[in-house]
Image (cartoon, rainbow, N blue to C red; front, top):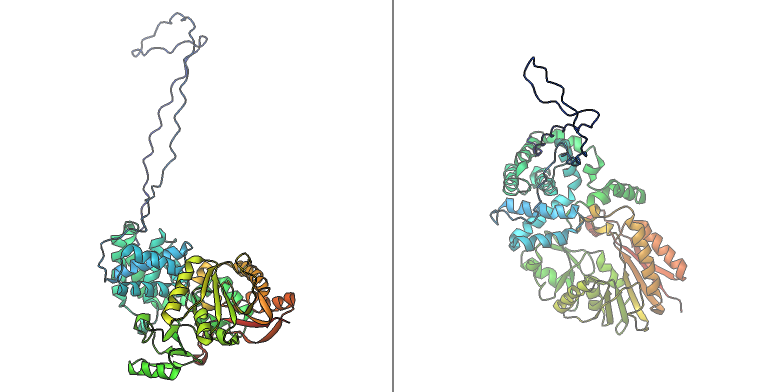
Length: 506
Protein backbone atom coordinates (compact mmCIF):
# COMPACT_ATOMS: atom_id res chain seq x y z
CA UNK A 1 0.00 0.00 0.00
CA UNK A 2 1.47 3.34 -1.02
CA UNK A 3 1.79 5.82 1.76
CA UNK A 4 2.04 9.52 1.21
CA UNK A 5 5.62 10.63 1.96
CA UNK A 6 5.98 13.43 4.45
CA UNK A 7 7.52 16.39 2.70
CA UNK A 8 10.22 17.88 4.87
CA UNK A 9 12.25 21.04 4.52
CA UNK A 10 15.96 20.50 4.79
CA UNK A 11 17.34 21.74 8.06
CA UNK A 12 19.83 24.54 7.58
CA UNK A 13 23.31 23.71 9.05
CA UNK A 14 23.97 25.51 12.30
CA UNK A 15 26.66 28.24 12.01
CA UNK A 16 29.90 27.58 13.88
CA UNK A 17 30.00 29.44 17.19
CA UNK A 18 31.98 32.64 17.11
CA UNK A 19 35.04 32.98 19.40
CA UNK A 20 34.26 35.02 22.41
CA UNK A 21 36.19 38.32 22.47
CA UNK A 22 39.16 38.27 24.76
CA UNK A 23 39.35 40.56 27.69
CA UNK A 24 42.40 42.60 28.67
CA UNK A 25 43.44 40.02 31.23
CA UNK A 26 43.26 37.05 28.87
CA UNK A 27 45.04 38.61 25.94
CA UNK A 28 44.20 38.67 22.27
CA UNK A 29 44.02 35.68 19.97
CA UNK A 30 47.38 34.62 18.64
CA UNK A 31 48.02 34.79 14.89
CA UNK A 32 48.62 31.64 12.88
CA UNK A 33 52.29 30.57 12.63
CA UNK A 34 54.34 28.12 10.64
CA UNK A 35 55.25 24.72 12.08
CA UNK A 36 58.02 24.73 14.64
CA UNK A 37 58.11 28.53 14.85
CA UNK A 38 57.59 30.14 18.17
CA UNK A 39 55.63 33.32 18.03
CA UNK A 40 57.02 36.14 20.11
CA UNK A 41 54.82 37.24 22.95
CA UNK A 42 53.14 40.47 21.86
CA UNK A 43 52.90 43.48 24.07
CA UNK A 44 49.68 43.78 25.96
CA UNK A 45 47.26 45.97 23.96
CA UNK A 46 45.34 48.84 25.47
CA UNK A 47 41.92 47.84 26.80
CA UNK A 48 39.11 48.41 24.28
CA UNK A 49 35.34 48.41 24.83
CA UNK A 50 33.79 45.03 24.18
CA UNK A 51 31.88 44.82 20.89
CA UNK A 52 28.16 44.02 21.24
CA UNK A 53 27.30 40.38 20.56
CA UNK A 54 24.55 39.89 17.91
CA UNK A 55 21.65 37.73 19.12
CA UNK A 56 21.72 34.22 17.74
CA UNK A 57 19.20 33.44 14.97
CA UNK A 58 16.40 31.12 16.10
CA UNK A 59 17.21 27.60 14.98
CA UNK A 60 14.76 25.78 12.71
CA UNK A 61 12.96 22.79 14.14
CA UNK A 62 14.20 19.47 12.76
CA UNK A 63 11.52 19.33 10.06
CA UNK A 64 8.23 20.76 8.90
CA UNK A 65 5.38 18.78 7.31
CA UNK A 66 4.03 20.81 4.41
CA UNK A 67 0.27 20.27 4.25
CA UNK A 68 -1.47 21.00 0.97
CA UNK A 69 -4.42 23.39 0.92
CA UNK A 70 -7.49 21.17 0.55
CA UNK A 71 -9.85 21.81 -2.33
CA UNK A 72 -13.15 20.04 -1.54
CA UNK A 73 -14.95 22.08 -4.18
CA UNK A 74 -12.51 21.17 -6.96
CA UNK A 75 -14.25 19.79 -10.04
CA UNK A 76 -12.02 17.42 -12.02
CA UNK A 77 -12.62 16.70 -15.66
CA UNK A 78 -14.86 13.65 -15.29
CA UNK A 79 -17.62 12.60 -17.66
CA UNK A 80 -20.92 13.83 -16.24
CA UNK A 81 -22.60 10.48 -16.82
CA UNK A 82 -19.77 8.38 -15.35
CA UNK A 83 -19.77 6.47 -12.08
CA UNK A 84 -16.61 8.37 -11.15
CA UNK A 85 -18.51 11.66 -11.33
CA UNK A 86 -21.26 10.25 -9.10
CA UNK A 87 -18.78 8.74 -6.62
CA UNK A 88 -17.03 12.08 -6.26
CA UNK A 89 -20.32 13.90 -5.67
CA UNK A 90 -21.45 11.34 -3.09
CA UNK A 91 -18.06 11.42 -1.33
CA UNK A 92 -18.24 15.20 -1.13
CA UNK A 93 -21.69 14.98 0.49
CA UNK A 94 -20.60 12.27 2.94
CA UNK A 95 -17.56 14.33 3.95
CA UNK A 96 -19.86 17.27 4.65
CA UNK A 97 -22.07 15.11 6.87
CA UNK A 98 -19.00 14.01 8.83
CA UNK A 99 -18.30 17.70 9.36
CA UNK A 100 -21.82 18.25 10.76
CA UNK A 101 -24.02 19.09 7.77
CA UNK A 102 -27.38 17.41 7.15
CA UNK A 103 -27.33 15.16 4.10
CA UNK A 104 -30.08 16.96 2.11
CA UNK A 105 -28.26 20.28 2.47
CA UNK A 106 -24.92 18.65 1.63
CA UNK A 107 -26.38 17.13 -1.53
CA UNK A 108 -27.96 20.43 -2.54
CA UNK A 109 -24.53 22.06 -2.28
CA UNK A 110 -22.96 19.31 -4.39
CA UNK A 111 -25.65 19.63 -7.06
CA UNK A 112 -25.14 23.39 -7.23
CA UNK A 113 -21.36 23.05 -7.50
CA UNK A 114 -21.37 20.34 -10.15
CA UNK A 115 -24.36 21.33 -12.27
CA UNK A 116 -25.41 17.68 -12.22
CA UNK A 117 -28.28 16.58 -14.45
CA UNK A 118 -31.46 15.17 -12.84
CA UNK A 119 -30.37 11.63 -13.71
CA UNK A 120 -26.90 12.14 -12.27
CA UNK A 121 -28.37 13.76 -9.17
CA UNK A 122 -30.40 10.63 -8.58
CA UNK A 123 -27.29 8.45 -8.77
CA UNK A 124 -25.26 10.72 -6.46
CA UNK A 125 -28.08 10.76 -3.94
CA UNK A 126 -28.51 6.98 -4.11
CA UNK A 127 -24.80 6.35 -3.43
CA UNK A 128 -24.71 8.88 -0.58
CA UNK A 129 -27.78 7.37 1.10
CA UNK A 130 -26.41 3.84 0.69
CA UNK A 131 -23.19 4.98 2.35
CA UNK A 132 -25.02 6.62 5.26
CA UNK A 133 -26.96 3.40 5.92
CA UNK A 134 -23.73 1.35 5.93
CA UNK A 135 -21.27 3.88 7.31
CA UNK A 136 -20.48 1.85 10.43
CA UNK A 137 -19.63 -1.20 8.35
CA UNK A 138 -17.60 0.79 5.83
CA UNK A 139 -15.60 2.59 8.52
CA UNK A 140 -14.88 -0.70 10.29
CA UNK A 141 -13.67 -2.31 7.05
CA UNK A 142 -11.44 0.66 6.31
CA UNK A 143 -9.98 0.35 9.81
CA UNK A 144 -9.20 -3.32 9.22
CA UNK A 145 -7.37 -2.61 5.97
CA UNK A 146 -5.44 0.57 6.80
CA UNK A 147 -2.93 1.41 9.51
CA UNK A 148 -4.41 4.84 10.18
CA UNK A 149 -7.46 6.86 9.18
CA UNK A 150 -7.21 8.01 5.54
CA UNK A 151 -6.67 11.72 5.11
CA UNK A 152 -8.10 14.08 3.97
CA UNK A 153 -11.80 13.50 4.82
CA UNK A 154 -12.73 13.30 1.14
CA UNK A 155 -10.46 10.27 0.76
CA UNK A 156 -12.12 8.42 3.64
CA UNK A 157 -15.54 9.33 2.23
CA UNK A 158 -14.58 8.05 -1.24
CA UNK A 159 -13.49 4.68 0.18
CA UNK A 160 -16.70 4.46 2.23
CA UNK A 161 -18.90 5.21 -0.80
CA UNK A 162 -17.08 2.63 -2.92
CA UNK A 163 -17.30 -0.02 -0.21
CA UNK A 164 -21.00 0.71 0.26
CA UNK A 165 -21.51 -0.33 -3.38
CA UNK A 166 -19.54 -3.59 -3.22
CA UNK A 167 -19.98 -4.78 0.38
CA UNK A 168 -23.70 -5.54 -0.03
CA UNK A 169 -25.07 -8.86 -1.27
CA UNK A 170 -23.93 -9.45 -4.82
CA UNK A 171 -27.49 -10.11 -5.94
CA UNK A 172 -28.48 -6.52 -5.15
CA UNK A 173 -25.35 -4.71 -6.28
CA UNK A 174 -26.07 -1.79 -8.56
CA UNK A 175 -22.62 -1.78 -10.22
CA UNK A 176 -19.99 -4.31 -11.23
CA UNK A 177 -17.35 -4.65 -8.54
CA UNK A 178 -14.30 -3.98 -10.68
CA UNK A 179 -16.08 -1.04 -12.31
CA UNK A 180 -16.48 0.49 -8.85
CA UNK A 181 -12.79 -0.04 -8.10
CA UNK A 182 -11.69 1.41 -11.44
CA UNK A 183 -13.92 4.47 -11.11
CA UNK A 184 -12.89 5.10 -7.50
CA UNK A 185 -9.24 5.09 -8.57
CA UNK A 186 -10.16 7.46 -11.40
CA UNK A 187 -11.68 9.86 -8.87
CA UNK A 188 -8.57 9.74 -6.67
CA UNK A 189 -6.25 10.23 -9.65
CA UNK A 190 -8.16 13.27 -10.89
CA UNK A 191 -8.53 15.13 -7.60
CA UNK A 192 -5.61 17.10 -6.08
CA UNK A 193 -6.64 16.19 -2.53
CA UNK A 194 -6.48 12.46 -3.27
CA UNK A 195 -4.01 11.94 -6.10
CA UNK A 196 -1.29 10.95 -3.63
CA UNK A 197 -3.44 8.01 -2.49
CA UNK A 198 -4.64 6.52 -5.77
CA UNK A 199 -2.51 3.43 -5.14
CA UNK A 200 -3.96 3.05 -1.67
CA UNK A 201 -7.53 3.31 -2.99
CA UNK A 202 -6.80 0.59 -5.53
CA UNK A 203 -5.07 -1.64 -2.96
CA UNK A 204 -7.79 -1.33 -0.30
CA UNK A 205 -10.69 -2.02 -2.63
CA UNK A 206 -8.98 -4.92 -4.39
CA UNK A 207 -7.98 -6.43 -1.07
CA UNK A 208 -11.60 -6.32 0.02
CA UNK A 209 -12.65 -8.20 -3.11
CA UNK A 210 -9.97 -10.83 -2.48
CA UNK A 211 -10.60 -11.25 1.24
CA UNK A 212 -14.29 -10.37 1.39
CA UNK A 213 -15.42 -13.31 3.56
CA UNK A 214 -12.72 -12.93 6.21
CA UNK A 215 -12.95 -9.14 6.35
CA UNK A 216 -16.74 -9.15 6.62
CA UNK A 217 -16.65 -11.78 9.36
CA UNK A 218 -14.14 -9.75 11.34
CA UNK A 219 -16.03 -6.50 10.82
CA UNK A 220 -19.43 -7.88 11.81
CA UNK A 221 -18.08 -8.86 15.21
CA UNK A 222 -18.24 -5.15 16.01
CA UNK A 223 -21.67 -3.67 16.92
CA UNK A 224 -20.87 -0.53 14.93
CA UNK A 225 -20.49 -2.58 11.73
CA UNK A 226 -23.29 -5.04 12.46
CA UNK A 227 -25.98 -2.43 13.18
CA UNK A 228 -24.59 0.74 11.55
CA UNK A 229 -25.45 3.00 14.48
CA UNK A 230 -23.32 4.67 17.17
CA UNK A 231 -23.02 2.52 20.27
CA UNK A 232 -25.06 4.91 22.42
CA UNK A 233 -27.93 4.68 19.91
CA UNK A 234 -27.82 0.87 20.01
CA UNK A 235 -27.83 0.92 23.80
CA UNK A 236 -30.72 3.39 23.99
CA UNK A 237 -32.88 1.36 21.59
CA UNK A 238 -32.18 -1.87 23.44
CA UNK A 239 -32.99 -0.31 26.80
CA UNK A 240 -36.27 1.21 25.58
CA UNK A 241 -37.48 -1.80 23.57
CA UNK A 242 -35.82 -5.00 24.83
CA UNK A 243 -38.03 -7.24 22.66
CA UNK A 244 -38.03 -5.21 19.44
CA UNK A 245 -34.68 -3.41 19.41
CA UNK A 246 -33.10 -5.61 16.74
CA UNK A 247 -36.06 -5.25 14.37
CA UNK A 248 -36.13 -1.48 14.95
CA UNK A 249 -32.43 -1.09 14.15
CA UNK A 250 -32.63 -3.37 11.12
CA UNK A 251 -35.65 -1.53 9.75
CA UNK A 252 -33.83 1.78 10.03
CA UNK A 253 -31.23 0.51 7.55
CA UNK A 254 -33.78 -0.24 4.83
CA UNK A 255 -34.82 2.14 2.09
CA UNK A 256 -38.35 3.37 2.92
CA UNK A 257 -41.38 2.64 0.74
CA UNK A 258 -43.11 5.36 -1.25
CA UNK A 259 -46.45 5.89 0.46
CA UNK A 260 -49.00 8.34 -0.91
CA UNK A 261 -51.94 10.12 0.68
CA UNK A 262 -54.98 10.28 -1.61
CA UNK A 263 -56.65 13.69 -1.65
CA UNK A 264 -60.25 12.89 -0.73
CA UNK A 265 -61.40 16.24 -2.18
CA UNK A 266 -60.33 15.20 -5.68
CA UNK A 267 -60.57 11.40 -5.90
CA UNK A 268 -61.03 8.19 -3.93
CA UNK A 269 -58.58 5.47 -2.99
CA UNK A 270 -60.38 2.97 -5.23
CA UNK A 271 -60.35 5.31 -8.23
CA UNK A 272 -56.70 6.14 -7.74
CA UNK A 273 -55.70 2.48 -7.46
CA UNK A 274 -57.43 1.91 -10.81
CA UNK A 275 -55.47 4.82 -12.28
CA UNK A 276 -52.22 3.29 -11.05
CA UNK A 277 -53.14 -0.12 -12.42
CA UNK A 278 -53.86 1.45 -15.79
CA UNK A 279 -50.35 2.93 -15.76
CA UNK A 280 -48.85 -0.47 -14.91
CA UNK A 281 -47.89 0.58 -11.38
CA UNK A 282 -48.44 -2.00 -8.64
CA UNK A 283 -49.79 -0.58 -5.37
CA UNK A 284 -51.87 -1.48 -2.32
CA UNK A 285 -54.03 0.39 0.18
CA UNK A 286 -52.37 0.52 3.63
CA UNK A 287 -54.59 3.02 5.44
CA UNK A 288 -57.87 4.94 5.08
CA UNK A 289 -56.27 7.23 2.48
CA UNK A 290 -52.81 5.64 2.25
CA UNK A 291 -51.49 3.87 -0.85
CA UNK A 292 -48.06 2.24 -0.94
CA UNK A 293 -46.34 1.69 -4.28
CA UNK A 294 -44.72 -1.70 -4.79
CA UNK A 295 -41.64 0.02 -6.18
CA UNK A 296 -40.70 3.64 -5.42
CA UNK A 297 -40.84 6.14 -8.26
CA UNK A 298 -39.56 9.65 -8.73
CA UNK A 299 -42.31 12.03 -7.63
CA UNK A 300 -42.41 13.51 -11.12
CA UNK A 301 -43.50 10.09 -12.43
CA UNK A 302 -46.31 9.53 -9.90
CA UNK A 303 -49.66 9.78 -11.73
CA UNK A 304 -51.76 12.70 -10.60
CA UNK A 305 -49.15 14.21 -8.30
CA UNK A 306 -48.83 17.53 -10.13
CA UNK A 307 -52.62 17.76 -10.30
CA UNK A 308 -52.99 17.39 -6.54
CA UNK A 309 -54.57 13.93 -6.52
CA UNK A 310 -51.96 12.62 -4.07
CA UNK A 311 -49.17 13.71 -1.76
CA UNK A 312 -46.19 11.83 -0.40
CA UNK A 313 -46.72 11.03 3.29
CA UNK A 314 -45.81 8.12 5.55
CA UNK A 315 -48.73 5.92 6.59
CA UNK A 316 -48.04 6.60 10.26
CA UNK A 317 -48.01 10.37 9.72
CA UNK A 318 -51.44 10.13 8.07
CA UNK A 319 -52.99 9.33 11.47
CA UNK A 320 -52.64 12.90 12.73
CA UNK A 321 -55.53 14.62 10.96
CA UNK A 322 -58.18 11.95 11.83
CA UNK A 323 -57.10 11.98 15.50
CA UNK A 324 -57.88 15.70 15.75
CA UNK A 325 -61.61 14.96 15.34
CA UNK A 326 -62.11 17.89 12.98
CA UNK A 327 -65.36 19.58 11.95
CA UNK A 328 -66.11 22.40 9.51
CA UNK A 329 -65.61 25.99 10.73
CA UNK A 330 -63.22 25.03 13.52
CA UNK A 331 -60.17 27.17 14.17
CA UNK A 332 -57.02 25.06 14.03
CA UNK A 333 -53.37 25.79 14.80
CA UNK A 334 -50.65 23.67 13.23
CA UNK A 335 -47.55 24.47 15.27
CA UNK A 336 -44.08 23.61 13.91
CA UNK A 337 -45.86 22.97 10.60
CA UNK A 338 -43.12 22.69 7.95
CA UNK A 339 -42.91 20.98 5.51
CA UNK A 340 -46.71 20.94 5.65
CA UNK A 341 -47.80 17.35 5.08
CA UNK A 342 -50.09 17.32 8.11
CA UNK A 343 -51.22 20.88 7.36
CA UNK A 344 -52.55 19.84 3.99
CA UNK A 345 -54.13 16.67 5.32
CA UNK A 346 -56.09 18.71 7.89
CA UNK A 347 -57.46 20.91 5.12
CA UNK A 348 -58.35 17.87 3.00
CA UNK A 349 -60.30 16.47 5.94
CA UNK A 350 -62.54 19.46 6.85
CA UNK A 351 -63.24 23.10 5.96
CA UNK A 352 -61.41 24.67 8.87
CA UNK A 353 -59.74 28.04 9.44
CA UNK A 354 -56.14 26.98 9.79
CA UNK A 355 -53.06 28.88 10.89
CA UNK A 356 -49.73 27.16 10.23
CA UNK A 357 -46.62 28.49 11.97
CA UNK A 358 -42.95 27.61 11.91
CA UNK A 359 -40.00 29.23 13.60
CA UNK A 360 -37.95 29.02 10.41
CA UNK A 361 -39.50 31.34 7.88
CA UNK A 362 -37.40 29.81 5.11
CA UNK A 363 -39.48 26.64 5.38
CA UNK A 364 -42.88 28.30 4.93
CA UNK A 365 -42.69 28.56 1.11
CA UNK A 366 -42.57 24.76 0.99
CA UNK A 367 -45.95 24.67 2.76
CA UNK A 368 -47.28 27.27 0.36
CA UNK A 369 -46.21 25.22 -2.66
CA UNK A 370 -47.98 22.13 -1.34
CA UNK A 371 -51.14 24.10 -0.59
CA UNK A 372 -51.16 25.58 -4.08
CA UNK A 373 -50.67 22.20 -5.75
CA UNK A 374 -53.59 20.75 -3.78
CA UNK A 375 -55.87 23.75 -4.23
CA UNK A 376 -55.99 24.56 -0.49
CA UNK A 377 -55.48 27.71 1.59
CA UNK A 378 -54.17 28.50 5.06
CA UNK A 379 -52.66 31.41 6.98
CA UNK A 380 -48.89 30.97 7.12
CA UNK A 381 -46.84 32.79 9.73
CA UNK A 382 -43.26 32.78 10.91
CA UNK A 383 -43.55 32.29 14.67
CA UNK A 384 -41.96 30.47 17.59
CA UNK A 385 -44.44 28.04 19.13
CA UNK A 386 -42.68 28.46 22.47
CA UNK A 387 -43.57 32.16 22.74
CA UNK A 388 -46.76 34.25 22.68
CA UNK A 389 -45.65 37.45 20.94
CA UNK A 390 -47.25 36.37 17.66
CA UNK A 391 -50.57 35.18 19.17
CA UNK A 392 -53.66 37.42 18.93
CA UNK A 393 -55.24 35.98 22.09
CA UNK A 394 -57.99 34.06 20.29
CA UNK A 395 -58.04 30.44 21.44
CA UNK A 396 -58.18 27.51 19.01
CA UNK A 397 -60.54 24.56 18.81
CA UNK A 398 -57.74 22.19 17.83
CA UNK A 399 -53.96 22.37 18.07
CA UNK A 400 -51.49 20.04 16.36
CA UNK A 401 -48.15 20.13 18.19
CA UNK A 402 -45.61 18.24 16.08
CA UNK A 403 -42.73 19.26 18.34
CA UNK A 404 -38.97 19.28 17.72
CA UNK A 405 -37.24 15.99 18.52
CA UNK A 406 -34.21 13.85 17.66
CA UNK A 407 -36.13 12.30 14.72
CA UNK A 408 -34.88 8.88 15.82
CA UNK A 409 -38.04 7.28 14.43
CA UNK A 410 -37.44 8.31 10.82
CA UNK A 411 -33.83 7.23 10.27
CA UNK A 412 -34.72 5.03 7.32
CA UNK A 413 -35.73 8.23 5.50
CA UNK A 414 -32.89 10.31 6.95
CA UNK A 415 -29.98 7.91 7.62
CA UNK A 416 -27.59 10.75 8.38
CA UNK A 417 -29.48 11.58 11.60
CA UNK A 418 -27.87 8.74 13.55
CA UNK A 419 -24.39 10.10 12.79
CA UNK A 420 -25.29 13.73 13.53
CA UNK A 421 -27.12 13.28 16.83
CA UNK A 422 -25.40 13.11 20.20
CA UNK A 423 -26.50 11.29 23.33
CA UNK A 424 -27.40 14.50 25.15
CA UNK A 425 -29.63 15.84 22.37
CA UNK A 426 -32.70 13.95 23.61
CA UNK A 427 -32.76 15.71 26.97
CA UNK A 428 -32.23 19.14 25.43
CA UNK A 429 -34.99 18.65 22.86
CA UNK A 430 -37.38 17.21 25.46
CA UNK A 431 -36.88 20.35 27.54
CA UNK A 432 -37.62 22.55 24.53
CA UNK A 433 -40.68 20.51 23.59
CA UNK A 434 -42.09 20.72 27.12
CA UNK A 435 -41.87 24.51 26.94
CA UNK A 436 -43.70 24.51 23.59
CA UNK A 437 -46.47 22.19 24.80
CA UNK A 438 -47.10 24.24 27.95
CA UNK A 439 -47.18 27.44 25.90
CA UNK A 440 -49.64 26.05 23.36
CA UNK A 441 -51.96 24.72 26.07
CA UNK A 442 -53.02 28.26 27.02
CA UNK A 443 -54.03 28.86 23.40
CA UNK A 444 -56.55 25.99 23.46
CA UNK A 445 -60.23 26.59 24.19
CA UNK A 446 -61.98 24.74 27.01
CA UNK A 447 -63.09 21.33 25.68
CA UNK A 448 -60.62 21.77 22.85
CA UNK A 449 -58.12 19.08 21.88
CA UNK A 450 -54.35 19.17 21.51
CA UNK A 451 -52.54 16.40 19.63
CA UNK A 452 -48.93 15.90 20.70
CA UNK A 453 -46.84 14.28 17.96
CA UNK A 454 -43.17 13.38 17.80
CA UNK A 455 -41.13 11.25 15.45
CA UNK A 456 -38.78 10.10 18.21
CA UNK A 457 -38.32 6.62 19.66
CA UNK A 458 -36.85 7.79 22.96
CA UNK A 459 -39.36 7.65 25.86
CA UNK A 460 -38.19 10.91 27.43
CA UNK A 461 -39.28 12.67 24.25
CA UNK A 462 -42.53 10.72 23.88
CA UNK A 463 -44.34 8.77 26.63
CA UNK A 464 -42.51 10.37 29.55
CA UNK A 465 -43.11 13.78 27.99
CA UNK A 466 -46.83 13.08 27.55
CA UNK A 467 -47.28 11.83 31.11
CA UNK A 468 -45.48 14.82 32.61
CA UNK A 469 -47.47 17.24 30.46
CA UNK A 470 -50.79 15.77 31.61
CA UNK A 471 -49.81 16.16 35.27
CA UNK A 472 -48.50 19.72 34.89
CA UNK A 473 -51.59 20.96 33.07
CA UNK A 474 -54.31 18.75 34.55
CA UNK A 475 -55.05 17.60 31.00
CA UNK A 476 -57.45 14.78 30.19
CA UNK A 477 -55.66 12.18 28.09
CA UNK A 478 -57.79 10.57 25.38
CA UNK A 479 -57.28 7.42 23.33
CA UNK A 480 -54.43 7.63 20.82
CA UNK A 481 -51.96 5.15 19.32
CA UNK A 482 -49.05 6.06 21.59
CA UNK A 483 -45.71 4.80 20.27
CA UNK A 484 -45.64 3.35 16.77
CA UNK A 485 -42.59 1.11 16.37
CA UNK A 486 -40.90 0.91 12.95
CA UNK A 487 -40.41 -2.86 12.94
CA UNK A 488 -40.94 -3.38 9.22
CA UNK A 489 -44.14 -5.48 9.26
CA UNK A 490 -45.63 -5.21 5.81
CA UNK A 491 -49.15 -4.47 7.06
CA UNK A 492 -47.75 -1.77 9.38
CA UNK A 493 -44.94 -0.34 7.29
CA UNK A 494 -44.61 3.09 8.90
CA UNK A 495 -42.11 5.34 10.59
CA UNK A 496 -41.58 5.49 14.35
CA UNK A 497 -44.04 8.15 15.52
CA UNK A 498 -45.71 8.86 18.86
CA UNK A 499 -49.23 10.24 19.40
CA UNK A 500 -50.86 11.53 22.59
CA UNK A 501 -54.22 13.35 22.53
CA UNK A 502 -55.35 15.70 25.32
CA UNK A 503 -58.60 17.52 26.04
CA UNK A 504 -58.83 20.72 28.05
CA UNK A 505 -61.33 20.71 30.90
CA UNK A 506 -64.11 23.27 30.65
